Amino acid sequence: MINKYQDNHDTIIALSTPTGKGAIAVIRLTGEDAIKITNKVFKGKDLEKQKTHTIHFGTLRDENTIIDEVLVSLFRNPNSYTGENVVEISCHGSAYIVRKIIQLFQKNKVRYANPGEFTKRAFTNGKLDLAQAEAVADLIASDSEVSHHAALNQMRGGFSKEIKTLREKLINFASLIELELDFSEEDVEFADRAELKSLVTHLQSILKDLIESFDLGNVIKNGVPTVIAGKPNAGKSTLLNALLNEEKAIVSEIPGTTRDFIEDELVIGGISFRFIDTAGLRQTEDKVEAIGVKRTYEKMKDASLIIYLFDVKETEVSELFDEIKHLEEMNIPFLVIANKIDLLEKGELPEEFSNIQHFFGISAGKKLHIESLKKKLLEVVNLDSFKTGNTVVTNVRHYENLVNTQKALVDVIQALENGVSGDFLALDIREALHFLGEITGEITTDDLLANIFSKFCIGK
Image 1 (cartoon, one colour):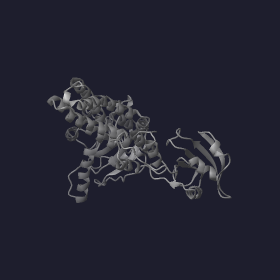
Image 2: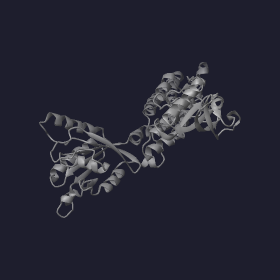
Image 3: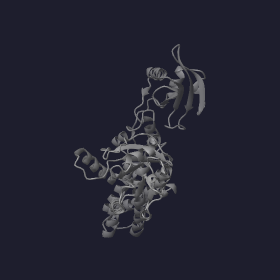
Image 4: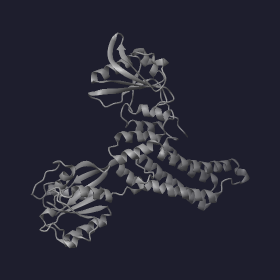
C-alpha cells in the first residue's frame, strides 16, 4: 500500500551554505507563509506583491534595529524546489549575522529545519521521487567528475525513468491477473501466460544488467580502492608520495618501515582513486609487522585494483612470475610496476619482462613516468558502460531492492512453469512491484523516509 508520507507544513528555516566566515551566506525558508513572514521583517519592496523568481534588495530589521542589508529571492509555489513558497536570503557571511537572522525568524514562529527536510518536502509534494531525492545528497557529496555525472543523471530522473518503465509493464499484467481473481468462478484467463513469461524474462535481463552495474557504481561513488603491494623496500611509500606529490608516508631504507596501511585520495582524469600503501609482503618473526602483512592481504582482497611494485634490480624473474600467478588467482585487476629503473645500466628493462600484461616501468624516487602511470591507471579502470550513457546503480538501497525484485521474478517464472493458480501468481508479482516501488518512493514507510533524509545536511 502506498504511504503518502505525512509531514507538517509549518514554515522552516536553515542555513544552506557552509558554516563559518565567508563573503556571503544563504539562508533558506520554505512553507506556505514563508513570503508573508519574511515581508514582516524586510524593509524594501512589498514582497507579497512581487512575482516568483525575482530578487529584491533591502534590509532585515528586528523592530527598529537593522541586522543586515540583504538580497531576497522569491520562489512561489508550485514553481520552487520544495513545491511550496520558498525564500532565499543572501546576507553577509558573518556567523553573528546568520545567527541573528535565524533568531529573528524563530521569534516569528519559524521552525529550524531538520536534516534533509527541504528535500523531503520536495519529495512529499511530488517535485522529486525518492531515487532523485537521494541523488541530491550524492550530488552534494560528489568529489570527482564521474561521481558528479552519475548523481546528476540520477537526480534528473534517468534511473527513475527506467525503474518506472519496468514497473508499468509489470503492472499491466498484474491488473489482468487481479481481474481473473474477480472472475475465479468462471475459470477465465485474461493474462496470456506465455506473454507474461516473455515479459518477466525480459525484465530479468534488464535487472541483471542494473545489478551487475553496482560494482562499477560503487567505484564511481566511493572511488577506486587501489592497493600498492610488494616486497619490503620495493618503494611503495615512495610511490604513494610521488602520486600524491607530498610526503604522506615515511620513507626509509630499513625494510618493514610500513607496518600498517596508509590511505589517501587522488582524482585522476575525473576519477577518484583511494591509494592504500601497505606493509611489505614477506615472512617475518616481528609480531607487529606480521599483523601488517596480514592486513595487506586483506586489503588486496577488497581492492578494485592492485599495483604490484617490485625493485627491478633486486627481484628475480622467476620470483616475480610466482607473484603474478598469485595475483591472477585473486581475480582482481592489477598492474605490475618495475621500480627504480633509473638504476638500470642502459635504462632499459630486461627483455624477459616484456610479456607481462599491464607491465610498466617507473622510478618513484625520481618521479620518472609517474604521469604516464596515472594514464595507465585510467586505462585499467573500465568505465566504458558509464561513458556510453548506460544507467549505473550507485545506491546500496537501490541495489538491494533490485536483487529482491529479481528473486521475486524468479518465483513468478517458477509459478508459471508449475501452472500455479492466479492468486499465488499475483502474490509473487505484487512482491516484485513492491520492491520496485520502494526504489522510487511509490511505496514507502515513515521509517524508510526518516532513515534516508536523516543523512542529509541541514539546509538541504
